[in-house]
Length: 306
Image (cartoon, rainbow, N blue to C red):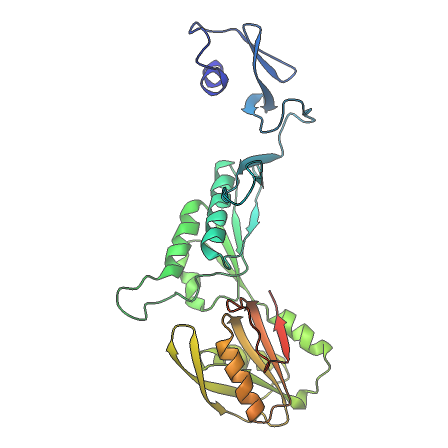
């Protein structure tokens, strides 16, 4: 213990000869000189981050303080509080915009828990920001979803809980267990509260890739009919609606998608549904990102689960 105390707390200005150290009332004394206030953790001193005037009510600390990563935006006194000891922390942190900053905060929290001897660390990620970068669409592109999965695993997470990933293959990018939950029940409960006649409902997929999701959603709505928006994308985050497969005339159209980013797909799809005679349009999504910060007038109702 003497070696630890000398290297951590004793100033180099003291005599190099071995000092006499005694612990009395949580104060470290060296040759009758107060060096620094300390607290006890299972009989071992640890550096306090609070003022020495604060009374310590317990000899075992319940929290460990680690620096916040947003140094330039927050006051230096702010700290990230995490459970210490042998707990099983669940860290809830979506990687929504600003994605890079939120991701780094998650990695720092995971690393802090690992260094605090947490038994099992679960990363709860409601929105996985890099899920759409799950494959190479052309040469020399990064698969960012796999990269982020590696970062989370290497940081020390033992388990991941995600909500409505953009594609199921993203779960395979993790080398640790992944629990995939869905926001569908929340949306279904909301639609049930609107008392819409089942004969008036039609579930619409905003693109061909979401047909499986829309079909599963339609089964929960008493096997409601299904319509598909045929859409062609001519650039990144740019969508062009071509035509509609199915009948929506005089019906309440429920568009289902995993996320709304720029709202290009949803807005053009809703406009097409109105042109085809839809009475109302509900846009239902799990992740309402809205990077363009605009909700089109063609959508009368927006239902977001997360």
